[in-house]
Image (cartoon, rainbow, N blue to C red; front, side, top):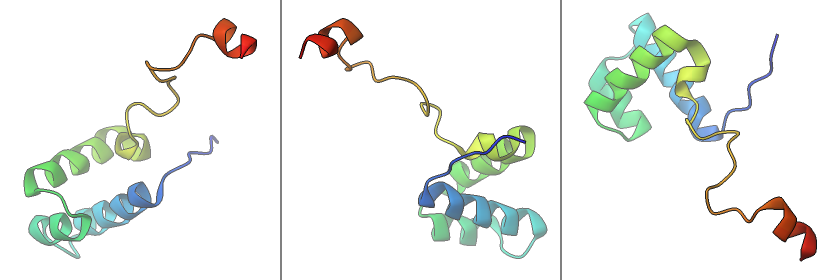
Amino acid sequence: MTRIALTPQELRRLDVVKRLIRGDINGTAAARIVQCSVRHMKRLKGHYLTQGIMGLRHGNVGQTSNRALPKRTRDRI
């Protein structure tokens, strides 16, 4: 089993999406809790249903920045 590191914001979204799927809250209340639009809440729910927890992670996690200096330059500094 792989460990997945989530930020506090992503953990909060996960909790709210799970509550939304269970039917404890509706989409409007979920969006208000997470402070996003109802449309984005629908997207998050869809991503969670199709991709699981990975659907709630930011897409750029694990990638190097496009502004990062090349390794050879960093080694010289």
